[in-house]
Amino acid sequence: MSKYDLLITGGRVLDPANDLDEVCDIAISDGYIEKVQKEIDPSFGKSVEDWTGNWIIPGFIDTHVHVGGPRSTWDPALGHQMLALAGTTTAIDFGCIPEQIPDGLLRKGAGLNFGGIMVAIPEITIPNDHPTHDQTRHIVSDVLKRGALGIKITGGYYPFSPEITSRIFSVCNEFRAYAGYHVGTKETGSRLDGLQEVPSIIGNGRLHVAHINAYCRGSILEPDEECKQALSLLSQYEDQLVSEVHQAIPNGTQGLCDKNGEVLSDVAKNCLKLKNYEMTADGIRQAIKDGYCSVMKQTGDTVGYIKGEDALNMFEELDTNCPLSFPVNLPSSAFNLTTAKKPDGNFIVDAVATDGGSIPRNIAIDSTMALVKFGALSPLEVAIKLSYNPSKMIGLKDRGHLSEGARADITVIDPQMGKAVASYVDGDPLLKDGNILKNGGRWLVTKTGEQEAITSGLDYEILDFNSSKLYSGYKD
Ligand SMILES: [Zn+2]
Image 1 (cartoon, rainbow, N blue to C red):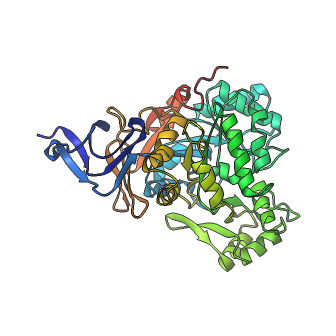
Image 2: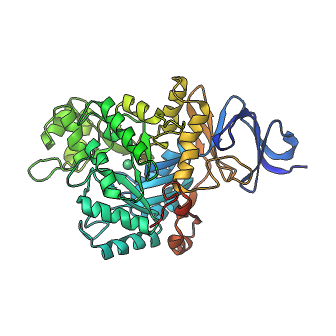
């Protein structure tokens, strides 16, 4: 007689929370882990899935993706499928409009656990670029009510003054809302100087600093020196900051220019400057002609890169308001930042994320596996970077490990290919044989957003950031 809904057998189970790295079987019932043990009798499983030769990690939690946000040239909700195909089981949209979360889950959902933080854009998502303290409190409580988990400031695109940046994050802290930061203010940039400004911005507060590698491209100092200084800062403020690195070489940015042809976004400007292009529409045109700059475009159900003449035509059609990509992220910086450890053996940068979703660079699993082949990470450390640490960052207590009673979210990785080949959410297959077997998904909200989640009709789950690493030990 079968005792379990599902048995996952034969795989090498990597579960850092339980210090387990062994070939084991996993018994699952009602969406939860019942048992991880060697050689469970297969007749006990209603169904048995054999993953001999593969690695089994707690489901990949991507703490930085883009499945929403003010994008006009493609449907950002395509990101759900793109993430699912990459082996993701849980993802946080790092800069959306709250209503895009249920909309995306309902239209294009691929069975993920999914939440998001709202991007703060003056006159678009918030009233202006100098909200008072009271207005800021209203903004944060409203965002949580609408079902987002917190707020992101994108200093590389919509920088605020240091004082307002500080105010927005301190109000997020007061509400125990998630606070995400792409560094840079009106006084610094999306570079090392923006990162070095973080301590003065947060005071005693808490912050998730996004994609540390993006500030170590050699804009100010040699890339190695920038990594060294970034790591030193993160170590010094380890109790207040959580962080992640993405490992894709192409970035994603915006070409929009003003009426004089000057590029507006600090990120795009930095990319042009790195290779001595003018920071103008003509500079972008030349960078496209030279093959340095690509354009991102939706084709069918996915988003990819186009180059050369096609890219140039799209840039003109969109009158510069065009999604661009430059190969500016340095593999050496991603390597340094991903593998650096504190004296106690813990990683300085908590996690590997993709900064992907509907941006076509969902390669966190592939690139982290490449670091194992290189000898820079152990197999257990793959699970630490992709699941265990991310679960702690956002306080998902019953994910990120495979203890009895944990949610049966699992990612299966083929160690030869270095790719995810299958995934399970709540013990149900999500990714199998290159196909996505689920739709919809589960909306991650705070307690304040519960009513909105109920109204949506979606399955939902309440996150309490008091139990996250971000707010661990935090007192007002
Ligand atoms: Zn991002």
